Image (cartoon, rainbow, N blue to C red; front, side, top):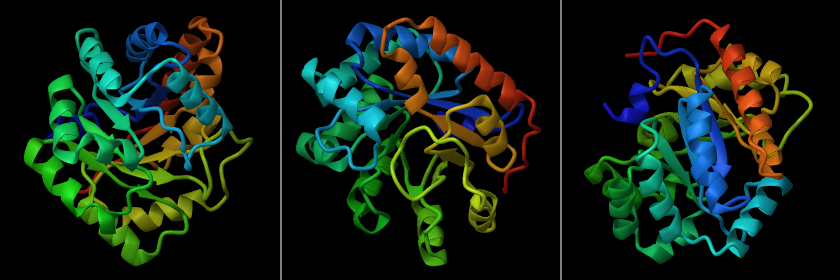
Length: 265
């Protein structure tokens, strides 16, 4: 079992997954905020590789990606930053990247360097499972979890396909659209999660639109983990990380109030 999958096994509670864009607002903040998130209760951290056309992201993460690119952050620099982070944290780290930077780097070379730097998983939001066979083979051979996304609009056949191919956990997009803070979670979210739960053995983690402790708690009642990104990015804008710590701790407390679910074997 991978380190990523082990994060969801008893006695672990609901997983808190934080997202940050590597190099936003600067590299020094990235090196500081990831250990801070781990200390404040994050079980997993997603490291976003900046890209010029982040089609799945809302305005907040788009702006953070553009700022990181202006700072000169590249996939190679993201890998080097991860190597440095690995000396500070032992929680799972997952890259979130669009496919173009990975393809440009070279699939085998990128996965190999991910393993060397201490990355546990890879999320590529614009890579459909029908086109991911080559990368799946490479990641499985080298022990890197490739995580696919499902949306409320996913068909039953797509749900079955993704559950067959995804490793580590399943990323459930709460709404059809882009990342970003929202005032409420969709009313039909529980039904979507239940549809996936009937066929999935992997942990289910909900992302997109979770920006408060109350929303995190609501999502955790039906899922195994919650993913929070845009709100962290907003709080990091000034470089003052005290607010980030306070927010992360509030999310951790909210999730700890929710009983864990029993996963399928």
